[in-house]
Image (tube, rainbow, N blue to C red; front, side, top):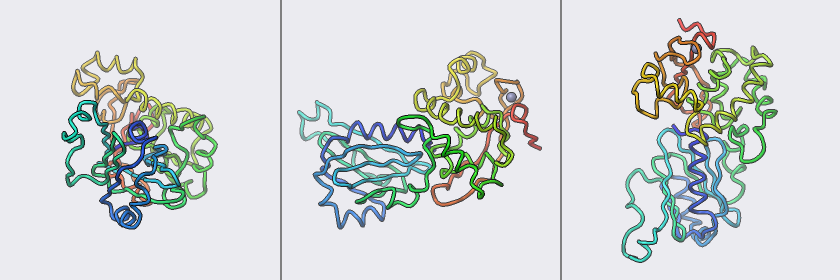
Length: 308
Ligand SMILES: [Zn+2]
């Protein structure tokens, strides 16, 4: 499932291909967007895409004259981008976009470029402020991956300590997009491990030291995942790559990206104990929170968990 850093990469790719260009066509297959386009498609064609951004796991495209599109990829969705290559410009008959198939949810074509959304259940188009028109956007907490400035730690803490969350576990809270936006299962596991936090610790039991580690580690690991595709440091990755006992499949780059996520039964790099996995109850607040992967990975020794 794409988490904030992966959605930011899609937003970057769409921004590169679409922004500054005029929309030639915008088609959608999701129900609400299709209905909106039946009434309004003519208004959107010919308008310029201004900017494509992400907030947490949501992607928002701003179009001139206050139009917008919005997507959430849930488990399986992904965006693809295309630019008309110089070659196909010369051979004007050569198709430069794939044919539509049943996975397609939206297709935005601009001059010389396009973006296609596959398998995502949520795609909206509209006119006005998306944060007012799409209920769930207005509830999002501060982005783990801010565009400019620092992670809004004060707002994260304010939301974390709202009375309604005090009995929640920190493991569930980090997945709650209303507290901090953009964390999913791998970032949650790695942040808790980095801060030596028991995923089942309740929020009211967090110490100042725990809190200051979280506010430093959330943006640090989200940025590492965005920039390097890994939350493990380069030296930890080298250690895993050079010791076959530390990975499932020696030689596979994927196995060195994280320190606990999907490393069940492998030795912890810090203490040597086996990494464990357990299911953790998370809050099912709305369709945004419909994550099926609720397994939390941890080192029982480093994180002071009694797993039995
Ligand atoms: Zn350990």
